[in-house]
Each structure stands twice: as C-alpha cells, then as structure tokens.
Image (cartoon, rainbow, N blue to C red; front, top):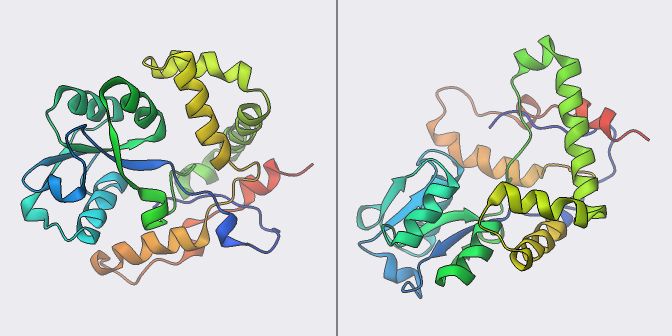
Amino acid sequence: MPSTIEPARRPARREPAVRLPGLGQQGAAHVDAPHALAGQRIGVLSIPGQTGVSAAAMLDKWKLRLEDVELLELGTYPAIYRALQEGRIAAGVLTADYEVAGSVAFGLRRLADLGQELRFQGPIVATTRGYARAHPERVQRAVDAYVQTIALFLDQPDRVLESMKRHLGFLNHEQALAVHAFYARRFQRRPYPSEAGMQRVIDLYAPSYSRSALRLDEIWDRSFLDRSLQP
C-alpha cells in the first residue's frame, strides 16, 4: 500500500480510538444471511484491491469457498450500486453513503461491517516517494486541504450537505444527513493512520511478496501531516 502520513512527533497511540473504514458488504433484499450467497455473484471494485480482498476474507470467515461465489470486478461504486439495484449481483462491497441510500430505495441489507470485522487500514492519502521529492510544495498543499476539509465537514455540516447531494446525486436531504452523521463519527481531526491496521494489510500480502516483507517505515511518511497539524 502506498505511503501515508503522520506527524513525526505524536502522542502515544491508543489503537481502539482509531476510526475504522466505512466499508460494508451489502446484500440485496432477498439475501438475508451470508449462506444465501452460495452460487451468487458479489460486486467489487477489483479482485486484488481492498474491496476484493475484503470480500474474499469475509467469505472465508463465513466458510464459503471462492469456487462457490463469483467476485465480479465492476470498477466503481456507482456500478456496484446499479448492479445491486438491477439484480445482476446478490451482494457488493460499498461505502456507507450507498448503504444508506440503498436501504431506503430498494431494501439493501448490511451483511458485514468490514471495518469492524477485518480492522484493516481504510482509504488513505497517498503518493509516490518520487513525486513527493519532486513536488513537496504541491503535496503539502494537498495534505493541508485534506485536514482543512475534515474540519469543515465536522464543524459546518450545513455547508457540506448540498455539496454531498450534488456529488452523490442519489441522496435526498434526509439521507444526506444520515450519511454525514455516519462519517462525522469516524472522521478524525488529527487523521492518524492505524499502525495495527496497516500492519494487517502488510501481513495479508506478505506471502505473495517477491522480496522480504515491507516495514511500516517504508510506506509511511509522517512529515507532511506533521506540518499540516502545526498550530
């Protein structure tokens, strides 16, 4: 996984306080339990990426074989949502905004909270080492904007609700409020990545590494966020 960012001088961590990613495995209205997925298809962004790996991990937890459930690469969350709505797949990995809208629109059911079940590090702000070295000012502005946007989201919900509805398209005002409340509980003003969550991802992919396993300090640059969070 690419590098994330965190202050070099930071307080001692309390892992349980780290918010978990808002990804869920959702089932169509007729799928009332995981065993109903046998012989069905699950929509993911990509099989080797986070959504595919998470779906496969949950199938293993549910003692369902990959041979019995097809993971279908659909590329985008809107495509997964439409496939569920049209009945072309029985389940899909989606973010909370789609879960809220789909539960109202066509009876979408949550089968698993992937953040709670797997405790992987969620989506991150990332770049390459080469780009960060070549364009440090541009990377710093991006990280500054990320931190400022989280503060705006938490402190001024009225300013972001209309933007959310325009961006997502399918949300009405009530659904937008519910989505905002969901993410407001998870967003962190000091957005530290989870050391334990990132290590779980490293460990998951370790068997397929062609060289020695990655270390956290190889994928984690703390300097940009450190500067963004300075008073």
